[in-house]
Length: 346
Image (cartoon, rainbow, N blue to C red):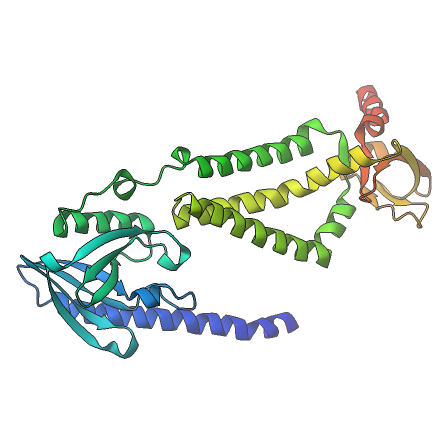
């Protein structure tokens, strides 16, 4: 109840932000519609617009600051629309011979998952993108259509007319290879290769420890930002760079525990040792020695085996511990009596 009350202001703030963004976009769309209603028989394209100064900002609610229409008037181009701030109307007519256009694409997060272009005019540059919502694929396709129709003299390369091919970039290919390698390592080492198991009680203690959370957040942020910038430097689009960075970051976190187990096994100075446990319930064991920090153990999948031992009796559990302090159950020793027991069962 207390947690819900504490989170209520956050939820209200997010709701207010969502309503504000929706209302702003809706209002701008209506103004844009009034302009389009006057363009019967003309070639035009709905566009979002931004000044270079606005586009360089990080702290902004929307990736554009105006909605308008780009109109083909033969030897001239006309841009008309409304600025978001103050709903001020603008209308500019530019001779084609006096303007230049450059494809910018979806290079950074500031692009808002949209593909942008820059139109250079005598009054200064202005950035525009096709008004297709916040989806990168139709944004790229619609912007390419604008270039083909309004700027036919400007050639488009393959990256501007096709989806980005991750396998054709050395950097994205390296990140994907590392991602699948780490994923394969984590799965195989946990479920196939290693006969050492980290017990559930210790896993929960690790995962719920504040230091683990702080370290995970810091590692995810550092890895994500580093990989993101690495991919951007290799001309990988912002959307693909962000997705790959997040995928690799989460996979690194998933592989951290199997890697820690391997390191602890390698650095351990003593072999597997038996530790005395007391059976307190069927398939539920507690360490006899409370000083060593041994984890409590549960074996719910082998209740038939544990039912033969009376509550209060003692049982030796083979555990390996290295300098990292991980208690790992050695199944190469632990499983032998269980296998023998079940082999005798009819």
